[in-house]
Image (cartoon, rainbow, N blue to C red; front, side):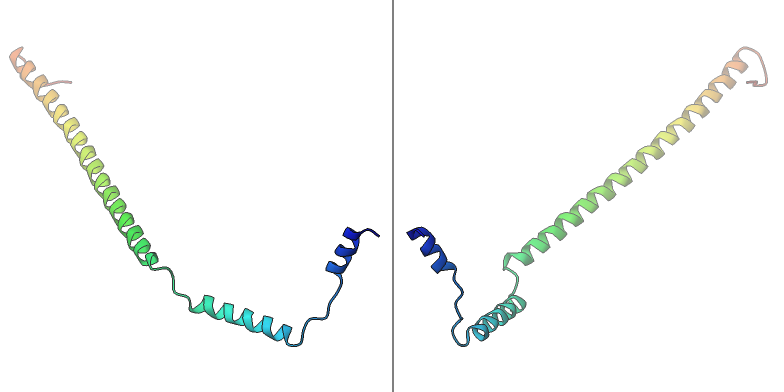
Length: 106
């Protein structure tokens, strides 16, 4: 057996842990758990939440204004179509009167 194999065998051989080792490990695990439960979030976490709420509300407001604008545009389009229909009927009626007819026929 060469020197490297002997060193490896020595490093990997089983050893009995010192007295109280298990208790110390379990106490450290319990302490870490308590720290994680009690730990407060970072100071910037509140600002991040506030910023995300602000961005969300601004985005929602912009979407709502866009919806209102689209509805107004659709209403305006419908009003234009009604106005064009009325105008067309009026022009046809006037043309019929100018041509000597007394009634309007489509």
